Length: 199
Image (cartoon, rainbow, N blue to C red; front, side):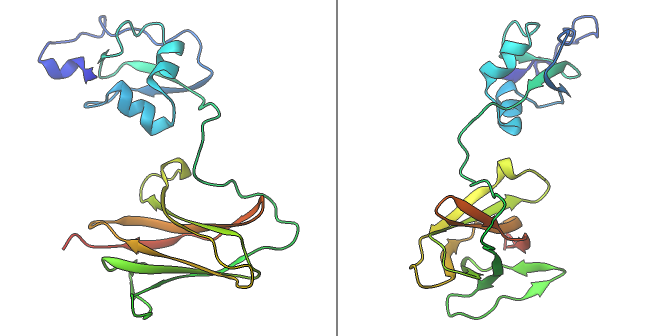
C-alpha cells in the first residue's frame, strides 16, 4: 500500500478526499510514508476496520498526505499481555533485576540498565506465582499494545521467583516489566528502563 504523493504527482487539496461525516474513534492525519497497513498496525486495528468506517477511501492502496481518516476503536483482539486486575490477596512484584549469565547485577547509567547480549531477567514476588510474563515496551510508544513478550516462566509452586534468559537484540531501548499471575489473578511490576547499544 502506498502513499499517492510518493509517485511524483502534484495533489491539490481539492483532490484529497474529505474525512468521514462521523467517527466513533479518533481522527488521524496521514503523514508522508504512511500506508494504511502501517496505520492499522500502529493503532491495533485491521485495514478492513479502517476502510469500513472511511467510505471516502475508494482504494486501500492509495491514501494522501494530509488526508484525515477515522481510526475506529480497536475491537476485542487477542493480546499476549494479561490484564492486571485488583488483587484481593495482595500479590505484589517485589523486585525486577537484570543479571549477567554469571549472576552479576548489570550496571545502570543515566537511569537505564546497560544490557549485555544475553541477560537473566529475574523477578521476585511476595508469594509463589503460577506464571510470569516478561515484556519489553519500546521507548517512545507509550502504549502497552506495542509491548513484545521477552519470555514466560512457570516457576515451582513453592518459590516466589521467576526468571528468563533474554537474547537481547542490538540497539534495544525500552522499558521492561513483568506480569505475574496466580490462576486468573495478575499483578504488574513497575517499568525498568533498559538499553543495549548497537556496538
